[in-house]
Image (cartoon, rainbow, N blue to C red; front, side, top):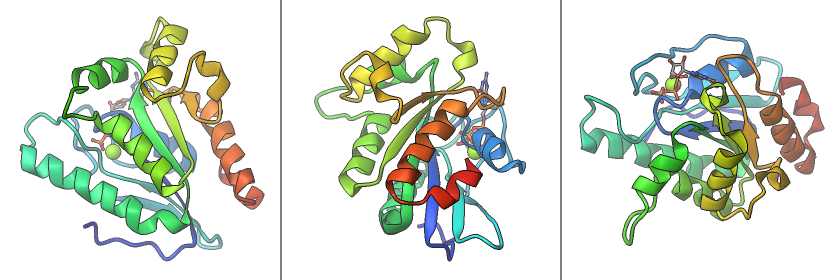
Length: 205
Ligand SMILES: Nc1nc2c(ncn2[C@@H]2O[C@H](COP(=O)(O)OP(=O)(O)OP(=O)(O)O)[C@@H](O)[C@H]2O)c(=O)[nH]1
Ligand SMILES: [Mg+2]
């Protein structure tokens, strides 16, 4: 279990496989730099970012899934720790942002779909729903995607959202964190904050 536990009553978490761009997105949202890098597994502990005067924290969690050079048991432990963190903090998590790599997510999901295997991204998506935590899928690295609508429809379908994807703007947000184009994500997060009666937090998004 991660040892950090922020003493705030409202939280937004960023979760997802390693190297999808969570820390890059965290930088875009907060304006503060976090370790990012070309090799997966850069973030090993939760990054919490809060504001002294505000009862709010954004948390960038370590990535899980395949990471070159990281043993299987370590990867599994990180995944378990992330799931436990979300479960333990579900009460105050207003929005769960599931970050995926728009270029590869559909292929990865298909590769890991089988009779006794649920892909991490699909599992996490369902897990947030089970906990009653609104989830936004930040489909990152869209700057590398040519067949935008086809990719997004394919992803929607795998998450159980019947295409066309445009019907789910509160759930699917195509972005490019590295280029600073994250408006669809901000709009989706604001939607859920509004639903939670927390328009006061719009200033962070
Ligand atoms: N092309 C492109 N690359 C991106 C984008 N966002 C992030 N990256 C790159 O993806 C790599 C991984 O980014 P990180 O932000 O470290 O990813 P992470 O999800 O925090 O990774 P872990 O901490 O290992 O889980 C870096 O080389 C980033 O520059 C994007 O929108 N487009
Ligand atoms: Mg990171």
